[in-house]
Amino acid sequence: MFRDKWFRAGLAGLALLAVGYAAPADAASPKTLKQGQELFDENCAVCHQEDAIGEPGLAPSLTNPELLSVASDKFFEATIRDGREDTSMMPFAHLGRSKVRAIVAYLRSHEKLPNRSAEVDAQPGAHGDPRLGEQWYNYICSTCHGLDGDGYEAGGTGTAIGLPGFLNQVTDGFIRETIKMGRSNTRMLGFQGPAAMANLTDQEIEDIIVYLRTLSKN
Ligand code: HEC
Ligand code: HEC
Image (cartoon, rainbow, N blue to C red; front, top):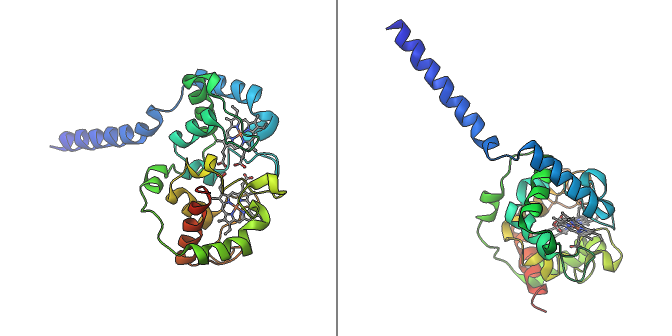
């Protein structure tokens, strides 16, 4: 009886371990990570900097905790493959899928927050008033992201969030969470809570997302 209890506790412990290891099971091998880092250093570091910390006005951080948390592998792979038209983020389709995935694995090895991308991408689409969103955008966001959302081109430090290269790769959830949380250690501060640049309501954030979606249609 006693032994049986221990046996079962042991099994439960093993089960817990198995669950604990379930996530890293599909984590990349050291060989893939090394390959990913080498590819990154060769192809990307010139703009995204060593360790992908980014450089304001040149290229965003790719090891930023909030970005890694909300962005799916699909987002990374597609952005790297196709680049972002009308920005200096060029396409890297010539590398092929397995090398692109090695780079993504290398970026993921910097993760500090849980990967929420599945939940974020499953969030409902935004509903709001684009005219109100435009007012907020022009008032708060345009200083850094440009009046038309064309990013660095406009002289700011924010990326081109009004161009199809960005908008066609992201869900409303991605935009919503980025506006709410911001990106730590960059100029993109969150827009909710006491430390926010401006404390926007949920509805105001919806309005801004709906407005941004109208930009890619021009
Ligand atoms: C003080 C400058 C600044 C302001 C104001 C600002 N942003 Fe940003 N934003 C940034 C920077 C910088 C980044 C990229 C972070 C990096 O460089 O790593 C960014 C990133 C983003 C991203 C992710 C883009 C991508 O390429 O993945 C979104 C979405 C975004 N901002 C939306 C907004 C919205 C909406 C507003 C207004 C409510 C706003 N930002 C205001 C500087 C700013
Ligand atoms: C010539 C400079 C340059 C090079 C080289 C470059 N990038 Fe970029 N990258 C950029 C710029 C600029 C942006 C932001 C574009 C914008 O305004 O939306 C960007 C954006 C990105 C984004 C989106 C980040 C976000 O915050 O949404 C990813 C992912 C990315 N690059 C990955 C890579 C990878 C991986 C490589 C190497 C294979 C690479 N880049 C090489 C300039 C570069």
